[in-house]
Length: 321
Image (cartoon, rainbow, N blue to C red):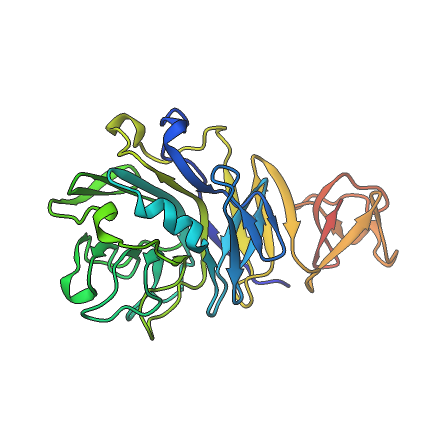
């Protein structure tokens, strides 16, 4: 039987839909994906998944799955062109780290906009956010002159988290799930930090050599605004449509999902051992009798004609479509 772990809890959206849409400059909601191409319908930028990263279904939505190794999303220099023009701005994104995933050691960056793919202590402008200390930082010349703020502990795991960073002038503020957790002054202004368009614009990869990629994490609804959104537009996560999404993932390979989206149960992934299908309400193998078929409340039911749902037949789970 498939051993599964429940590790997703809520989607989506902490920046309200009224946050001036004309100031929304980039939004990767992962709904427009084909092969390795992921297109943002706001900016018309086409990003590329790299390594083992891919876009996967999550109920009625789609999310980025960087995978278990060196996977990430390359938003390309086109995203860097937008970032280089920013003075006041906001970055908003949702993510969920698997409950038993590691965030220990260097790396684990959720996003990075960098002129160099491997910044050093003294070279390379960048701005980036990492999950191992929940730190947002910007530098005009390497990590030795980095300016930033952090929570100081690693991110929560096993649930969706909304992170929002907004900057007004040189004042930066970090929000988690709608609550301000850090703020500081003296943050570099991006328009002055980058002398050319940063070419390394990534979700899930560090702008430093040797740092760990972000793995076993799902990412949803990445947004970039060219304003600092108001306090009224930063609130606790609640999906605009009121949908509740639960996901059960097989932890061994991350490819198998059982998703409950707005009270609709669907299975996504390859057919695993322990779940057999029933076509048109009848068992496909015809080997089970009525006496060994039960619904999930434990009541015996007739196996010859079943409504859609999940049943226990002969001690095994059976999905009726």
